[in-house]
Image 1 (cartoon, rainbow, N blue to C red):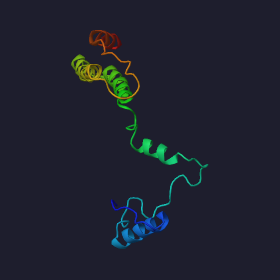
Image 2: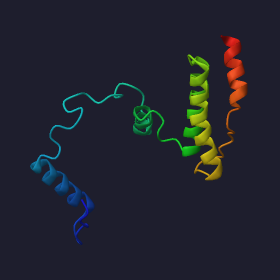
Image 3: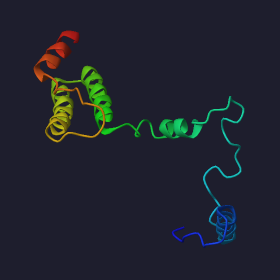
Image 4: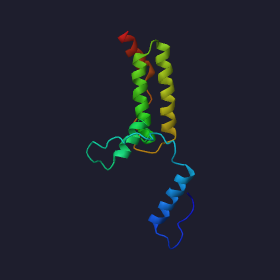
Length: 131
């Protein structure tokens, strides 16, 4: 699909020809979801339905790197609270703290990170109290 539209041919005609040729080559055969109804047709009209669906499918991977790291840090903090041993708490926090330190040293794109490494000893003390 890298060819340019020929001069004197309308975009609609050119695109329709490319679609027809692709169909003849079988490029649309066996696509995922073939023969299944389109989802969301019964709901209210939403111009951004495809964006929302993509984000849902990719579970937030469309987030900027700084927001992804914040989300990962929150998940790591929760995992540390559920950890079965102090060693596991330290490992979880050590891994996320390294990522946070890297992001502080080499700023990432997106909104400000606003995140500092976790105080491992403080989190371990909280973990002990809950045990």
